[in-house]
Image (spheres, helix red, strand yellow):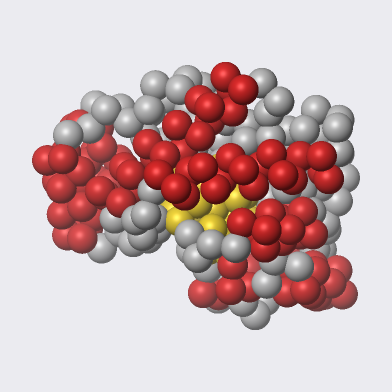
Length: 272
Ligand SMILES: [Zn+2]
């Protein structure tokens, strides 16, 4: 993204009617990292304030694996998150959201110390206000952080106020947590409360899913067009605790151009 693109993203979001956003600091399929000057960051901050867009989240690069046994990949992952957290501080972002990574079948117990070591290394290099938010994963392929229990253990062992959690309706659903009835929604809420705890949840990604519940794949769909459906989203988003969470769309868009006004309007119609 160019420096002018940084401000344009805010204008686009505002024109759509959004009041919070998530951005990438560089193309997420590479470790390029943010290349903005301090004045670019200041301009972004000023524009966000002018347009009333808050909070701001940064989604980390997709190549990151904090659980990797490959030292080079783990080092690149750490460096990338340090850069995004520093950039986040400069633009006043609330959090950098990351897919923790994969243990490639070795099991969560084996991955936990590696992930904790990676996060501790990141926090030794960053001391700002922007938090590192571990996103719930969709399960399968050894993805770390697919259950409330795993997310909670990572947060607990790291034990820093700089760490938090981001939920995602499509990932929860693909990971087997359904919420299409009041009872299931209640049990999901209870699971969150008894594992990570609501105080750790800083953001909610609202997406429908192209794949069925429990299929352990991460495939986002436009709201109402997938297996989750709007009645279930409505039930979940209007339940206690969700009303205070920033809601972020990561839908493919009805024109395949990313989150659009139509998805945002559907989302707004679901939330009372
Ligand atoms: Zn997400």
